[in-house]
Length: 276
Image 1 (cartoon, rainbow, N blue to C red):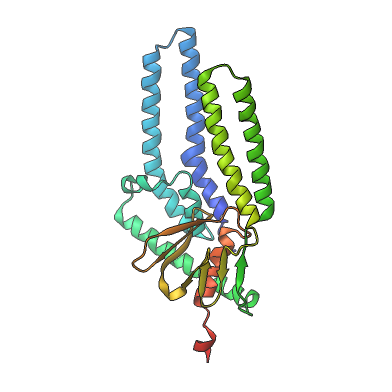
Image 2: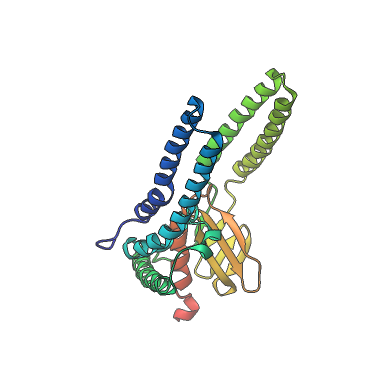
């Protein structure tokens, strides 16, 4: 890691605390105080609701103000701005907020320039490190992760047992119906997980210097308009003039960051035909 820079998760946590956690703590304190005041009869319910609405508006405006400042700090201090950005997208950096951010064109341009410069450094270090680790250029095969699937199956069976007990013992019709619905959803989840366990040795991904095979469909590197890791564990890929598709990596035998590194390396190495 470069001197003076922090990890992606550390940079993400800085924004999380300032944009989400501290305001949420203040909101919890205010709601508790207002509820106690209403309970004692010293604060009218309407006033407490108006006060809460005003605070939520202030929180929203604060997030629009501080998010661009965090982004500008992050791009100068995070070792991997792309990973940090994807972390933030899963929590406080929602896409619909972006047009409303209090962000001047000059600062936005500086952010994009710094982002591109740092990611060029990250990619160069990836490639240099990968040259030794993947020097034989053998295909990388990815399967489902067996242990995660077993734990998921166990969790789903426990939930189904809970909802089955509720259905049998509950007298209220509405709760019986709700328990039956959740039991049905859990049953579908169990079937899906069992199918994944049964097919655990099936090749989900295969990465070579010629391209990537995703669930049986092969794409040459030059066929893909986009292939990227987003939201930490989702592979997004799109052919030229094709629709964008997604593959969740949650139950696979590698992490999103590792797959990102593999794709970056294998897309840039030369094929034997070119090397000759």
